[in-house]
Structures are given as C-alpha cells and as structure tokens.
Amino acid sequence: MGLGLSLQACLAKAAWDVATLPVKAAGAVVDGVTTSQSEADEKRGREIRKLEERLGRLERDYYKADAKCLRGDAEKCRERDSIAAEMREISRQLPASPEP
Image (cartoon, rainbow, N blue to C red; front, side, top):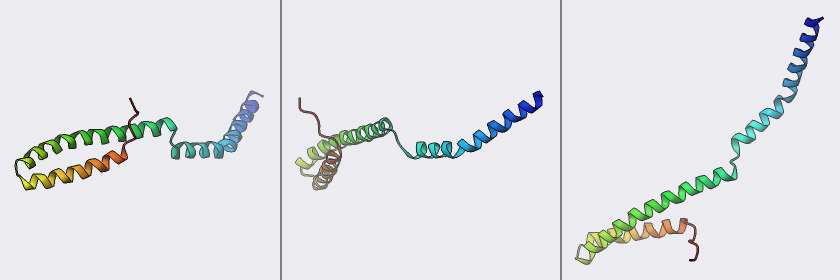
C-alpha cells in the first residue's frame, strides 16, 4: 500500500512539473531579457561617471594645449580645438546639472 501511494505522489509531482514547465520557462526567458529599472539606472550611472572622467582628462589636456598654443605652437592650437570639439560632444551626452 505504501508503495502505491508513493508511486502516485511521484506521478502527481511529475505531472505537476510537466504542467508548470512552460510557465517557468517563459518566466525565465522574460527575466533573462528584461532589465529592471534599478539595473538600468546603475548602468546609466556608470556610463555618466565614465563620461565625466573622460571630460576631466580632456579638460586637463585642453588647458595644457591652450597654454602651448598661446606661446605660438600651431600644432597645439589644432589639438586644443579638437579636444574642445570632443568636450562639447561629451557634454551633450551628460544630463543637465541641477541649479544651485
């Protein structure tokens, strides 16, 4: 008698697993392809920090090139202008700073 109940319970669980498999699989696919809002926010935050770091390096390079340009180095003038263009492009990608 115990074997019969055990077998029935095993069959019932197997049937349940088979019946719920499509739902579990669909849920796993949705979880795998969707990004939560907090994950998206974290990713955007990392992107912004990288852009800000790049902008900081460019600003330092800009001032060095500008100083040499003012002393008559035409090549540094072109470099300074190129750096300024990249700085403008990065600034467009950053969110606006809140007013103080």
